[in-house]
Length: 208
Image (cartoon, rainbow, N blue to C red):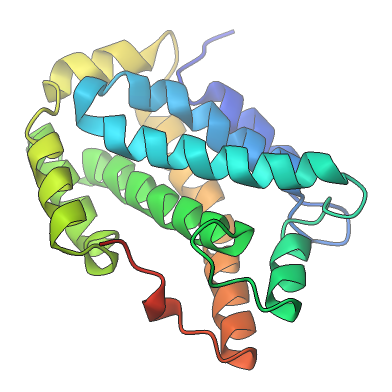
């Protein structure tokens, strides 16, 4: 069977939602973890993003593991924190889900750029994706670190060759962006609504 580096995540996305339409914690986090091998192919350029994603996945997984039946639904831990007025804490699961979703937004936009702008270098594709997604949530320090890291981006052609495997990489990137984006949109809409009801400002959740 022909496979690319995206094959495991594409398979995993089939199980993210329960029959009643809710996003399930473990399958969603598993899909996010299955993206990490793609980031490895970027080398040092994506070290910051990978560490951030890994840390937030671990935080959410630890909460889920403490009571899988209670936290089987992705948003249950966030709702609990809002009720307990702990959602704004820097180590909260709410913060973890928000930043995990933001990082995934960046990756989806990056892969979309690679599809839609074949003439762009990897650095251009990364910079444009960063500007459209994460930059507005980063302060000077985080933004400067990110800008430096993106200059270490690998050669685009070599990168595409490495992640292609034996499958159709363009088709799989398209499927990944199309299938994963609605989950991220749902996360953002849920968090925005919940924060509005709880008078918690999403704009307060920024990096220095």
